Image (cartoon, rainbow, N blue to C red; front, top):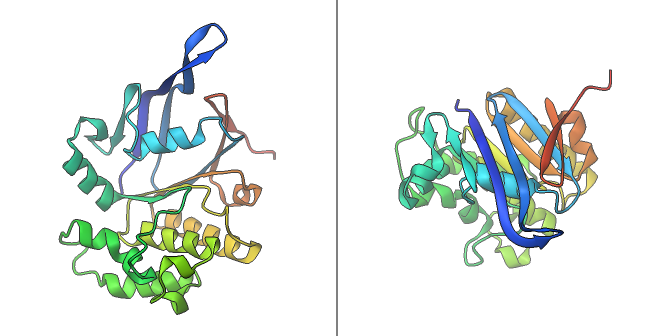
Length: 234
């Protein structure tokens, strides 16, 4: 499994704040997501959590520093190699809803498999079977042939989670993954993420949901672009 880490990364935007025209959404920091660990980052809206996640995901170039997935410097790659690397190794659950409206639930989940075809690292994996298993685990198996417009927000969220896991990624990045879920499905989804960490994957949740804290191996908070570790209360 691969480690994802940011080395000296920051996120700056041009915005008038007090006496400066530069606004730090993420102040310069080192941040690592080790394999086999579920990391939870909490903080108020606008604290910089999603900006950090997007930089780690290869979606937003840091103002300074670099992001490494194993030995690969994400932002040194051209668009296509970066997209292939992300597709194979990073599972992303975005905060918003991003289904392709013309595809069914199952087709949306299988979409990453069709974008960049390659031989699976562990041999021939039946992605159709895995999609069925993930739909069963997330409680949307009876919706496999339904179009996104017919789904609730919580059902769309669970579909996005299944899609993020379909390629068996080394790293899972999830932005508010329980935001649309009731208590029962929140427990199911968090248990699934914890299971993925137990299989050696690096799992990173950005959230306001305090229910996630009990599942975390490491907890951090973010305030005004600064990250702080949360120590155990024992």
